Length: 165
Image 1 (cartoon, rainbow, N blue to C red):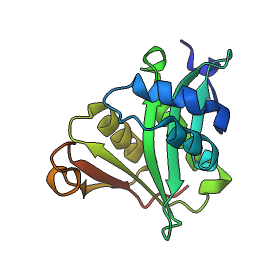
Image 2: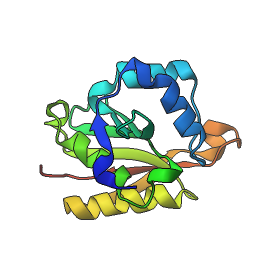
Image 3: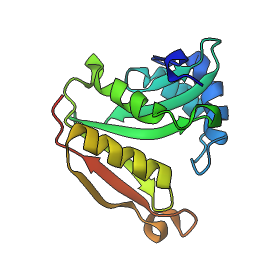
């Protein structure tokens, strides 16, 4: 698949169900309710990206938001890329496109949370830090025992920045 045929845009509520199905097809990502994905695609459209083929099929999605009381920090909630669009740098392209938006003009830091076993996400955010020539710091955000009662792996906070756009 040619990445040039993939169009990046702001999502709309019409993308919510497709987002839900895409995330479900991308383990180890945690699925959310369709309602949550509808809110991501509508309320958070300024800080989210939908990647679609020319026929409208959703093949990638990034959800994010500016952290309340931290207007210089974009939190990337989830990054999903369909099997058919992997290996083309689409995830990095989607996150990079967010940084170019006026809604992210004051962003100096990118944060996300990643489980230790999610090699794809670690690789993505390390490449992004390299591209931005910015340091990457890691700490525990949500602990397996303290926050998840042992039912979910620890989520590590990854912080990139400061970045200069």
